[in-house]
Amino acid sequence: MKTIPRFAAGFLLSVFLIFLSTKSFSQPTGKVQVGAYYFNGWTSYPDPHIVNTALTTNYPERQSKWGWITSTPDIMRQQIDLAADAGLSFFSFCWYYRNAKTFAIGDPFNQAVNLFMSAPNSNRLKFNVMVANHQGFIIGPDEWSTVVPAWIQLFKNPNYLQVNGKPYIVFFSVATLLQKFGSPEAVKKALGELRAAAIQAGLNGVSVGACVPPNADDLKKAEACGFDIFTAYNYHEIGFKPKPQVPNSPAYPTRAIPVTSLLNSDTLAWNRIVQLSHKPYVPAATLSFDPRPWADNENHYDTAPYYVGYSPKTAFATVRNLVNWLNQHPDKATAERIGVVYAWNEYGEGAWLTPSAVMNPLDGVKKAILK
Image 1 (spheres, rainbow, N blue to C red):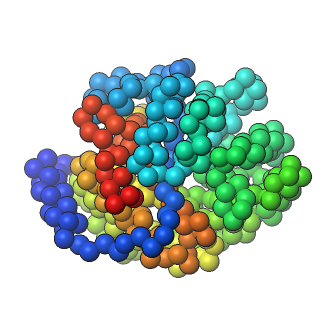
Image 2: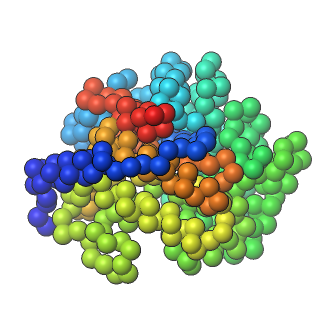
């Protein structure tokens, strides 16, 4: 398929940013808490499939100013300061259970959250975990008695993020929980066991969130499972269509799509979710999505659509859009008015906020939140 020329993408971006500069944004009416998803794959035990040649050779603009490996005590301390100075309120760490053996010795993918908790400046941010229970890390009844105590231990940290006075945990996949537990009733029972364990440990319970697409059937299944809150990891697929609000509308006739189209698709997803469900909602803002460095024979990212034009200005537009929505829909959000950004460091998927030698997306975030 024909790709969009660079000059055309640049023109579209310029027009959109001029529009943003003249558009009157509503002013924040109080404290909005904006966090960022933190992917733990950039550890001192690098996975060759994550830090691969395609990424390091072809996408140098994504490399952080510290390099590709950022899970060290000193770099974690610096990241906390940078995030807090830009107005972010928390990190939402992707959390993994691979298998019993790896979990017992400490999965490298969970290294970052441990570094965060031990950082001398960790009190500058809150944190929570988003359980990445997708393929390769699926959690079911056999793992439940192991993971629940581990989560409870995290919840006891004084900096753990609270929603409705309870520690807030999110599950990436409702589908895999249903697959492993067998029914919504069984999932609901397991979540009840988690809440009861938290109360027994001296906590007020647990606020349990689920990443759910803006689809009525998926939302009904999640509601039947007993989740308290709905959210998402990102909404990148919706932005691949010029008119995602139209059922069965065609996708863009090109793989390279202006990243600014995500603003419309994010908002459509947020509004659709709160129309379909009365559960409190934590909106997720999608900075970009370009996973070509991680292409393989299963995901086919080398032939799939991706976004172009990501910059500090588009980061500003994305986060300001999130802040505005939370200010305009306080009755749909949690009482704490929490929103989350995808992502702090998804370098392989083309969504990041960490400064690089080329640009600093946090410049845009700071303007969106603090000004």
